[in-house]
Amino acid sequence: MTAQRLRVLAAMSGGVDSAVAAARAAEAGHDVTGVHLALSANPRSYRTGARGCCTVEDSRDARRAADVIGIPFYVWDMAEEFDRDVVQDFVAEYAAGRTPNPCLRCNEKIKFAAVLDRAVALGFDAVCTGHHVRLVDGRLRRSVDLAKDQSYVLAVLRRDQLDHAMFPLGDCTKAEVRAEAERRGLAVADKPDSHDICFIADGDTSGFLSGRLGATPGPIKDESGAVLGTHDGAHRFTVGQRKGLNLGGAPDRRYVLSIEPVDNSVTVGPRESLRVDEITAERPVWSGCAPLTEPTACAVQLRAHGEVHPCRAWERDGVLTLRLDTPAAGVAAGQAAVLYDGDTVLGSATISATARLSEGAAAG
Image 1: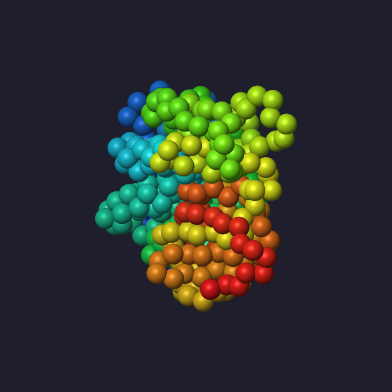
Image 2: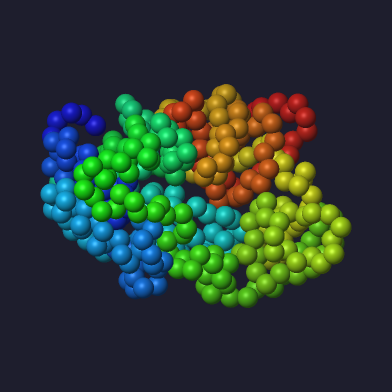
């Protein structure tokens, strides 16, 4: 973003990060308006408690913060869009045997699609959020606070969306944000962070999915196809999971290796069988570089807050292929594969398949 005075729409969740981000934007001289997104037609169905994301208390907290900052404040009803693009997508992905990231989908479909489109139509120049990430010369870079870095869940954004984004908190730590909130007199300074899925009130993901998808019994198999037991729904599992298999006195530890929605089966095996070194991903988005059409050395993060793996990556015919230098375990379809050059995001794609190649397999 340039240094001139901008009309900025500050998305205020009711938490400390978005409040300080809005305050910084206003202090920088921009014309800031706060907006809180009402994401549920029945707010009581969502999680309660002072957690800082999508709770029934958050609208009031956001309004109080806007009053302290001295900016106009509105509530936008995004419940229909949120249910369609985030909640229903979450259920459909699990039904298809994949493991989605709803926060990533919310950033993509709600905060930087529906909200940004509406903001631009209303004459705003940028949408400001409290994400811990830096935006340098139009490219996403990790926050200086690596423990709070959120570049992974924003890597799905296109370059044209980043051109209208503002992330004021990427140059400071979470401790510094809280201290600043206290200095500014913001009551949310000590508000706990949110870690759970906001639309699952009790935190019971398995129970939520069972309520939407029903009981769908199926077999639990080993790698040879032998049936070891049964389950009440493949949506209860994700790749790499060990608990909840209920296989009785199995002599060795088994992990979920794959989920097959066609026959509703779950395949389990030893931890070694989780290790993969080739990943295929779809719907690539290149926000930090031109598409990598030839095998290129970079690094990939395969889950939020997961470790980074050196790899070679290339896209052909709209499909991204990753060859890891060393195998990774527990890679689940539906998660994002985010490519980095150092701390800069190159692009992202949605994992669709994994494989274990023979040692020394060549790229291409």
